[in-house]
Amino acid sequence: MPIKFPFSRRRDVSAETWVKCPSCESQIFNKQLERNLRVCPTCGHHFRMSVGERIDLLLDDDSFVERDAGLESGDPLGFHDQKPYPDRLEASRVKTGLREAAVWGTGTIDGQRIAIAIFDFRFMGGSMGSVVGEKLARCFEAALHERIPAVVISASGGARMQEGTLSLLQLAKTTAPLTRLDGAGVPFISVLTDPTTGGVLASFASLGDVILAEPRALIGFAGARVASGTVGEELPDGFQTAEFLLEHGLVDRVVPRAELRGVLSRLLRVLPVAHLAEGPAGESRGWGPIGVLSGIAERLGGAVSDTVGIGVESGTNGDLATTREESER
Ligand SMILES: [Zn+2]
Image (cartoon, rainbow, N blue to C red; front, side, top):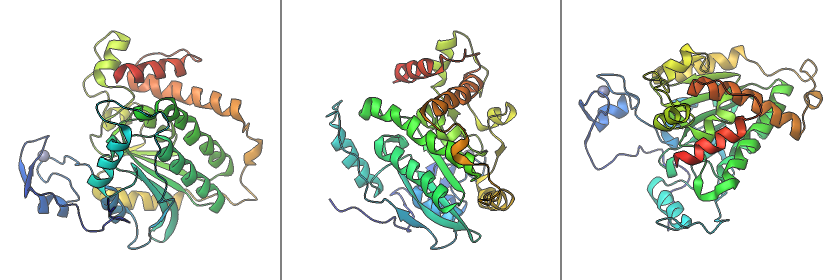
């Protein structure tokens, strides 16, 4: 099966000439939507974007160089639901022209070099299995090695159920290198787009030095119904929106899409990479499996309780998180 590679810069124009905005129900011509960065001209609803569209939106022309393009998922569990896992992968490859749900590489924003990873929700809901986790970890390690800032644009339903526990391991794999970036004074900017949920939010995505979000993006750990059922009470309207999380401190700023590149560019200027001599010594910051895991637990405690709106006893976060994620599916 031929795979369109690398990304076609040609926009992914669907056969339909117009779409209906899910928010205000106005009819928008696809061409008009594209000219407007896939934002509804009537109500400002932000439609999802493909990897190629994100690259065009954020990075300097022709600056993106993809890394690890050839990594492909295996089928370690021989997983089979209504369809075998390899068939689902193949269908997503054909649909998107991508090999996996995330792409990483290096590029520049106004000449400032970054390591960037971008999710594509069209590929199995942007779910994070072994390959996506590996790409994220390599992106962070390259940022550390080259001493350039890391940026991730998330759009994900969470861990990929077809890889079972191996997917949950990606939470630790993507989080551990961030401790080293932190220690080395290399900034990480996390951009949450619609939707950022499950194991992606519960790992690297909520650990940015700066966390930006697109307007009205759905951001949460478990679905609203599951979250509400777990705590046994009604939760406030819109508790999983970017705006709610801005008000409650998880998100630093909600940035309309047209301003995203400009805001990232300014952040990169004000968050320089520490010089080696002045940066705190990375390896002396408690780097080790236990330090990392307790760090994750501490940080997740805040994120999960903020998101779901309940107090979480420290030490039980991991179990709670796993149970909720599984019960949702
Ligand atoms: Zn609209």
